[in-house]
Each structure stands twice: as C-alpha cells, then as structure tokens.
Length: 361
Ligand code: HEC
Ligand code: HEC
Ligand code: HEC
Ligand code: HEC
Ligand code: HEC
Ligand code: HEC
Ligand code: HEC
Image (cartoon, rainbow, N blue to C red; front, top):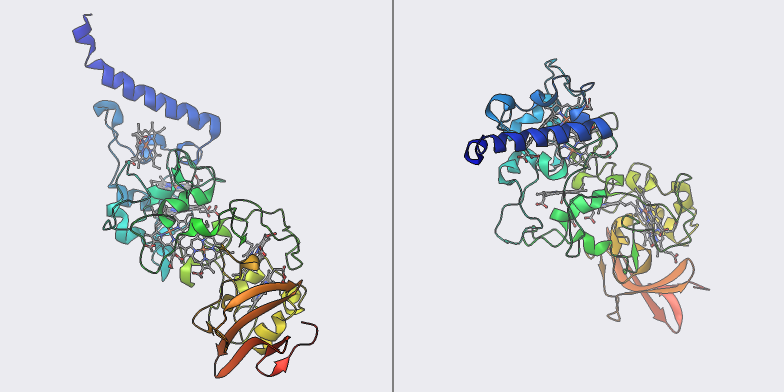
C-alpha cells in the first residue's frame, strides 16, 4: 500500500479510535448513557449509522434528542428515562431551555463577552451526555472559576453556573454577578465555594455544621420533591426549591420554608443568635429578606444586606450596621413596614427605636 492509498482510511481509523475510547471510559466509570443496562441500544440510542458513514449523525435534532427519553410523554422506547424534564422547564420560573437552546453553539466560549448576545441555557451547557453519571449530572461539562479562569472539566456545580451567572457581559439588567457574592474574602457568604466564616450557628439543623459545604442546588431546584432533581424549573420565583417570601407578612413554617430547611425555626424564633429575631419576624412582620442576602455580602457579617425597598437612612441620615455585642448589633436606619415606621438611632448615648430605648443594647 502506498502512502497515498492509506490516506482515505485515516479519518475512519481516527473516528473508530474515538468510539473505542469513549466505549472504554464507559465501561470503566459507568456513565449512564453509555451503560447497556440503562440504554440497551447503546450509541444508537442517539446516533445513527455511524459505522457506514463515519459521521456522528444524531438520531434527531439536538434540541429534541434529550426529550426523546426525558420528555413529558412516555412511549415505552428502550432506555426511556423515568423523569419528565420537559414539563419542568415550562414551569413559571425556569431555565429558558426551550426558548433559547438555538443560541447554544458547540464549542462556544463562555462567559459571554458580547453584550448584545442572546442569553441561553441548553441541556448541553449543563450536561455532557457521554460523561454524566448518576451522582454527578454535570460531569464532563466546562466550568468557570468566576474570576478569570476557564475550567476544562467542572469539578463543582457552581463552576458550571458561573459560566453564565458571574461576569458575563450580557447579564440582564436586574441580575448580579453571583460569583462576587461567594468570594472567600467577603465578610460573609453561604458556604458554597468554601466553608463559612461564622462559628456561632445555633440554628443549623443536625445534619449541618459550621464545616458544611452546600451547593447552589441546596436552594435552587425543583419544588416537586418526588420529581427529577436539578435547577430546571420551579413554581417558586428564582427557581427556588422551597417557598421563600421576600415580602413583609405573617411568619409561618411555609413563609420561610427555604431557610427553615437548614436553620431550625425554633432556634431563630427563640432568638438564639440575634436577640431580636422574634421581634422583627413575628411581631414586626419582617421577612428574612429585609435584613439578609441569600448569597453573600462583601462588607457585612451575618449576610446582612438590607432590603432597600423598606430600609432607608434614619432621621440623622445614617444607614449602617454595627456589630456592637454578640446577638445585639446596632443598626442605624429607618424601616417602613406596612404603615409603621421604625427610626433606629442613638439618643443621648442610648440605642433607641423611635422613642423607645433599649436598656443594655
Ligand atoms: C444520550 C445520547 C448519546 C449517546 C447514548 C451517545 N452519544 Fe455521542 N453524541 C451525542 C450528542 C448530542 C453529540 C453532539 C454533541 C454536540 O454537538 O455538542 C454526540 C457527539 C459524539 C461524537 C463527536 C465528538 C464529541 O465527543 O462530541 C462522537 C465521536 C460520539 N458522539 C460517539 C459516541 C459513541 C461511540 C457512543 C456510544 C459509546 C455515543 N456517542 C453515545 C449524544 C449521545
Ligand atoms: C435513549 C434514552 C435517553 C436519551 C436519548 C437521553 N437520556 Fe438521559 N438518561 C436516560 C436514562 C435511562 C437515565 C437514567 C435515569 C432515569 O431513568 O431517569 C438518564 C439520566 C440522565 C441524567 C442524570 C445523570 C446521569 O448521568 O445519570 C442526565 C443529566 C441526562 N440523562 C441528560 C440527558 C441529556 C442532556 C440528553 C440529550 C443529549 C439525554 N439525557 C438523552 C436515558 C436517555
Ligand atoms: C449556559 C448558561 C447558563 C448556565 C450554565 C446556568 N444558567 Fe441559570 N440561567 C441562564 C439564563 C439564560 C437564565 C434566564 C435569566 C437570565 O438571562 O439570567 C437563567 C436563570 C437562572 C435563575 C433564575 C433567575 C431569576 O431571576 O429568576 C437561577 C436561579 C439560575 N439560573 C441558577 C443557575 C444555577 C444554579 C446554575 C448552575 C447549576 C445555572 N443557573 C447555570 C443561563 C444559565
Ligand atoms: C442559601 C440559599 C441559596 C444558595 C445556596 C444559592 N442561592 Fe441563588 N438565590 C437564592 C434566593 C433566596 C434568591 C432570590 C432572592 C435574591 O435574588 O436575592 C436567589 C437568586 C438567584 C438568582 C437570581 C437573582 C440574581 O441576582 O441574578 C440567581 C441567578 C442565582 N440565585 C444563582 C445562584 C447560583 C449560581 C448559586 C450557587 C453559586 C446560588 N444561587 C446559590 C438562594 C440561594
Ligand atoms: C442550568 C443548568 C442545567 C440545565 C440547562 C439542564 N440541567 Fe439537568 N441538571 C442540572 C443539575 C445541576 C442537575 C443535578 C441535580 C442534583 O443532582 O442535585 C441536573 C439533573 C438532571 C437529571 C437527573 C434528575 C434526577 O432526578 O437525578 C436529568 C435527567 C437532567 N438533568 C436532564 C436535563 C435535560 C434533558 C435538560 C435539557 C432539557 C437539562 N437537564 C437542562 C442542571 C441543568
Ligand atoms: C431585622 C433584621 C433581621 C431579620 C428580619 C432576620 N434576621 Fe437573621 N440575623 C440578623 C442579625 C443582625 C444577625 C446577627 C446577630 C449577631 O450575631 O449579632 C442574624 C443572624 C442570623 C443567623 C446566624 C446565626 C444563627 O444560626 O442563628 C441566621 C441563620 C439567621 N439570622 C436567619 C434568619 C432567618 C431564617 C430569618 C427569617 C425567618 C431572619 N434571620 C430574619 C438580622 C435579621
Ligand atoms: C442548604 C442549607 C441552607 C439553606 C437552605 C440556608 N442556609 Fe443559611 N447557612 C447554611 C450553613 C451550612 C451556614 C453556616 C455557614 C457558616 O458557618 O458560616 C449558614 C449560614 C447562614 C447565616 C450566617 C452567615 C454568616 O457568615 O454569619 C445566615 C444569616 C443564614 N445562613 C441565613 C439564611 C437564610 C436567610 C436562608 C433562607 C433564604 C438560609 N440561610 C438558607 C445553610 C443553609
């Protein structure tokens, strides 16, 4: 065989070796979609006739392929999945997969640097169908550190999220750089990237401690606990997995269900940390959102970030948070809830709310 004659075979050999390679990895690590026990038709579940043409032709358009098995209608085809992701991405609050998947481009570079680019989220941004496993659904996808570094294979869920929710130049006007909230140098943050800074956490449920790490999925996910997991969609705003009322109103287990999943309601309402939790939350109808950021805060400890819809400067023009003594911070501000106004300020050296002064505070 002359060198010239060999040439046409090279692409075939190349493609076959990729197939052998992927097959080998599958056997070694048990990726769901490459396991014959789960998808009996193997590669043919998604590809057709690769042998004869040497192409990686998909069985149907990329947008529809996943819904063949993860759709709302179950038709009994071999290897069909149990869950229905289709109906979830149509929920009120959801990743706009159906609406924007066409903007996903294979091999694209994210975070987006073109301010006018369409935002999108496709199955392929968060999942690699060759490499995902039951315990790591995002396995084999790209990630971003949130601070300049691309990551070839994301090791943590948040690295996948940061490709679109950190310093993208096409963020919607009301969205924020989520990575900047979780930076280790911040005064406080929920422990997603690294363990938290607060060592006095009486409210934590028994399965958690000050050394715990939580994920974005700890708060963002399906409201239906019997359905598929993941941040695909929810009946609650911001794809939250439990209810979280961000408006003033009566306290109840369901109003702040999200927080009470990890912070014992009894501890919060018994004032085990902040000495005036009950006064604000139960008697004052204040939501946790009036005072706390769910992600993190650069300047304030305890995730303090006032809701500026109801919190404004006090009658002396001050708006600040001072850690005064444990459980008894001094806040200088005015808070408006319903028709009531609470002016927090120092009067003659005493800490007072309107004209009522707090002895020992
Ligand atoms: C669950 C569906 C699914 C299964 C099962 C599947 N693939 Fe794929 N494969 C895809 C999709 C989708 C693409 C296109 C990816 C893209 O364009 O981003 C692809 C792309 C490829 C490519 C192109 C290079 C690459 O990695 O993107 C090769 C080669 C390939 N598949 C081989 C295989 C082999 C071999 C098997 C069986 C061991 C297999 N695939 C099983 C969905 C699947
Ligand atoms: C031929 C059927 C089939 C197709 C096509 C298919 N899946 Fe799956 N998928 C399954 C099965 C079966 C499971 C196992 C869990 C279950 O039964 O729900 C699964 C599980 C998953 C999981 C959970 C993590 C894991 O690896 O176990 C993800 C994520 C997933 N699929 C994404 C996709 C995406 C994205 C596509 C489109 C590229 C796709 N699937 C196409 C059958 C399929
Ligand atoms: C490929 C891009 C992309 C990736 C990756 C991504 N998202 Fe999104 N996400 C979007 C788009 C687009 C929206 C719609 C609103 C917007 O443009 O920000 C959205 C919306 C959201 C919302 C709702 C925001 C609101 O105001 O209601 C949450 C919460 C969210 N994503 C969390 C996550 C989490 C958690 C991850 C990681 C597991 C993640 N996202 C990964 C693109 C992405
Ligand atoms: C402790 C619970 C919690 C965790 C953990 C959490 N979030 Fe959120 N997230 C919320 C709540 C509550 C809201 C709605 C209130 C708000 O916007 O502050 C929200 C809002 C959002 C929004 C929409 C608002 C915006 O600022 O753009 C996005 C996007 C988002 N989160 C992404 C993420 C990502 C990505 C992660 C992981 C890196 C994450 N969240 C971790 C509770 C959480
Ligand atoms: C914004 C990122 C994102 C997008 C877009 C996305 N997923 Fe997921 N998905 C996840 C994450 C993260 C998990 C893992 C949740 C967990 O294990 O807690 C997951 C889990 C899954 C699971 C496993 C559910 C279970 O109960 O174990 C399936 C199946 C799945 N996704 C399919 C899809 C399909 C199909 C699409 C496109 C229609 C899609 N996903 C789009 C992030 C995403
Ligand atoms: C009026 C403002 C305000 C409101 C409303 C509020 N908090 Fe707090 N919270 C604080 C302050 C201030 C601290 C820190 C007290 C200290 O350690 O000095 C704190 C501390 C905490 C802590 C950390 C220590 C611990 O384990 O208790 C948690 C958790 C917490 N709050 C949860 C909540 C939840 C959940 C809600 C809603 C049900 C809520 N907070 C409502 C101001 C508030
Ligand atoms: C998935 C579990 C989880 C959920 C849900 C959750 N938290 Fe937390 N939270 C934690 C853990 C773990 C810590 C401990 C971090 C540490 O030790 O600094 C923490 C710490 C805190 C702190 C103290 C942070 C500091 O640095 O002082 C506050 C305040 C807080 N959470 C409020 C909330 C509020 C408000 C909600 C609801 C919007 C909420 N949490 C939902 C797990 C959770």
